[in-house]
Length: 135
Image (cartoon, rainbow, N blue to C red; front, side):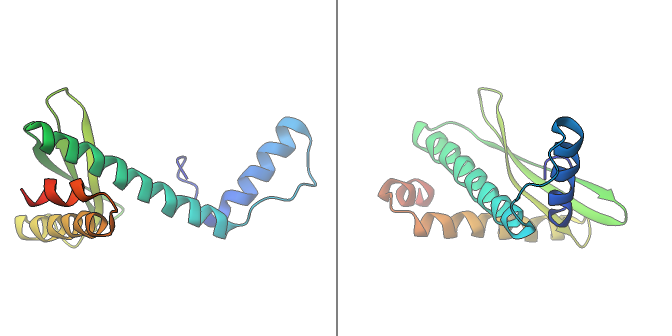
């Protein structure tokens, strides 16, 4: 997935690499549904990690700078939302396809990203996470 290989082609790419590097050709591999599940799990873990860093910053009273950026690729517009911290680290809190690069669209998509984080917090078993975001 990190090499821009769609989930439908992961199996064939792995087979090709195994065949050329180790001459293994008859091996049972996970199917594309496994790759798709792993992508979703990875995204969920990334969101939890980002949320953890944001909550820690809120507890410590650290200033967090929110930044946005956008690009167009093959006629599709994409926007990112980043949180920058005082130690120089940056967490991407969202990457979404957008209908346009207007300020209105950027704000609308940012609200969607924040709603996702609020939903994660509401499901969180940790009481401190609910308190940090509310303040």
